Image (cartoon, rainbow, N blue to C red; front, side, top):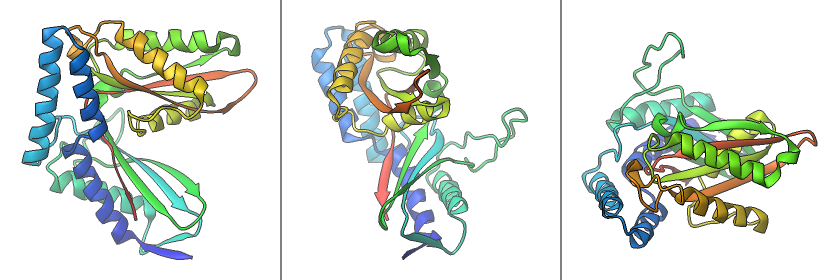
Length: 280
């Protein structure tokens, strides 16, 4: 049994909170450049240039790429042969978020109660997803989620008879209703299957996959490509001013489901699609 001290987890989560907010992933930068080459609308080209410049400034000057530094969503993959010592795993993750948002000068946007709405002043609690995996590995991913895009996400319990066409119709409806609000160009995470809660988790997890990687199953690879074309044909464009680039990518994750249901969740990320990961 491998022992992992909580101090290592705290230090890692702290660093990932800062890194995710300062450094935009290379895959998103590549999508910006590809999108600019396709654009023939000057306003859209100009906005894509500004987004690239914004990412460069954040990286070079060590500051957040967006004023909304998000609620910390933390994904943990923990090997069944790992024993966390020195304290509570959950408290260690929250302490890492607390230190990261303070030392990184990141905006603290979390309230302790959804109705009383008193800011906790340290951006905790984080939303934490745990997955038990074989072996003694420990992987942590921090995905700060701004709520301009989070608020545009939806979930629907489709009927099995709705099929692929029903999924397409729902996804396009969600993106149309979102319009410019999630700060496009967006990345669209889609979860299909499982239960109500599982579909939402899958949609969120889909946003962690690189925009350069397609679903390994050809059925969903084609659906990702078809939806990306259909979404970009909506003409919402960068920041909602029109153009060919409403979305940079569509990522789909799936899971087995009940014979009587077809849950579909759509989780939208803004152009600052942020996540940073580490293996401890």
